[in-house]
Image (cartoon, rainbow, N blue to C red):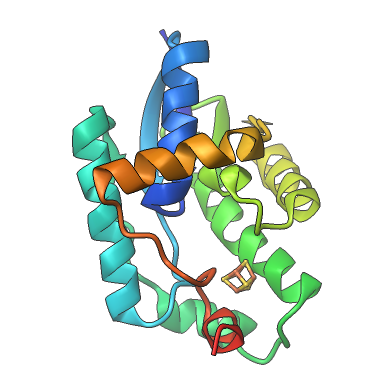
Length: 178
Ligand code: SF4
């Protein structure tokens, strides 16, 4: 069975892609990886991580939660950048580069991200940065536009009682909702 390394951003974004893989690509053995140092503050990070851990248990998905919460490194790199396209690009590049590096280190040939579920994310930038990161490590960036499963994914999230956050993740996105 072929493997696929799956970067996971949060439980509500993972719910539909996991159903999609089960129905459409049961031939792929998924290896999940939670790495999101962009999430602020630490308590929010823990809520998202714990909710994903519940979903993983429910779905039988193997997920590695060991990557450190390097919020300091992320802030040092992106801190001065104003909110907007370029900050989000840098944020995607940060996470997807790390995911591609880890996927290659573990011997995978392709990686994907559940960011591709969200209607609130910038898919053109995710594609560019995902492909760039994949190229650097001789991988394929496995992209599916999972926005088509938006309603179903949220129904699943509600039914399972998953934590559904009200902002993207960084301090700027938190301030936007106030
Ligand atoms: S809004 Fe979301 S994608 Fe953009 S920088 Fe903040 S956390 Fe990252």
